[in-house]
Amino acid sequence: MELSELKVFAAVAAERSFSRAALRLGRTQPAVSQAVRRLEQDLSERLFDRTTKEARLTPAGELLLGYAGRLERLAEEAESSVRELRDLMRGRVLIGTNEGGVHALLPLIARFRKRHLHIVVDVRRVHSRQIPAEVSEGSLDFGALSYKPGKSDLAWLPLADDELVMLAASGHPLASRRRVTMAEVGRQVVIAHNEPSPARERVLRLYEERHLLLNMMISLPSLDAIKRAVEMKLGVALLPKRCAVTEISQGRLAAVPVSGVSMRRNIRLVHRSAATLSPAARAFLEVAAEHGAEKNGRATSKRSR
Image (cartoon, rainbow, N blue to C red):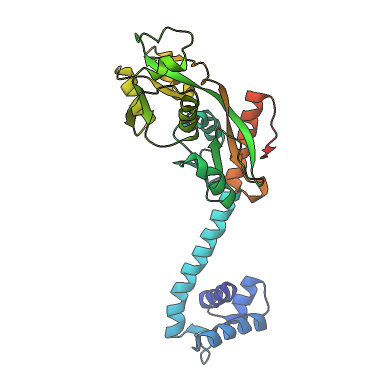
């Protein structure tokens, strides 16, 4: 069955006349009769009683009329939904990041929401190593990474800068220092995230290469739990400074650079070409380009190398 034939059938049923239905639809009467005949052939059922002056529905026609109305409304709803998607009245942007990357995304999300209130922004926790593949395959629209993706089909925009620091509670002996050494940090009780990450592996590798002790005694499942444990003076943590901006500004935590470990890193928003993105994702990319231009003085995406 063709939807166009169902519309012709519904018009004939409403007008109770093939000729009036033809006028209503702006078609010839033979074209209307042919469309109804094809529908009857497809169903192997008569839909109208042609022995009467008016086009009256047969029992099969009455049954089909209910479905025809529902299908027509469904088609209109689908068309309206696609139009709304195009006009950015609905849609979803799917972003993958590890827990630390969320803090870099929030200012961009706030900026996007000011323009596009009807688009859902869905940020999912994804292991950093998986993000390039999932963005490339289309499982994610975007990903937040602290390293350049190794895939040539991905581009990236600068999102934010960050720095790995030692977090300590106010009043901790090292909290007032301008800088500490790796050895000094290693002798403290170190509170770490229990999920692997590129940053964690880099720190472990640096300590191993220098044959230094890293007294990693507490492992917790979230950044919030780690920050709370540091506030409770259970130990110190090596985390991106951006993760604790609020606690630092309120004086609850101190961020101290660590010689040999602390260095500024760039958080990137990786994506496929704009042509492969949904209208909602393209709108997000436009806002991200503006955001990156203001932060870094350039708006163009860079190709992964």
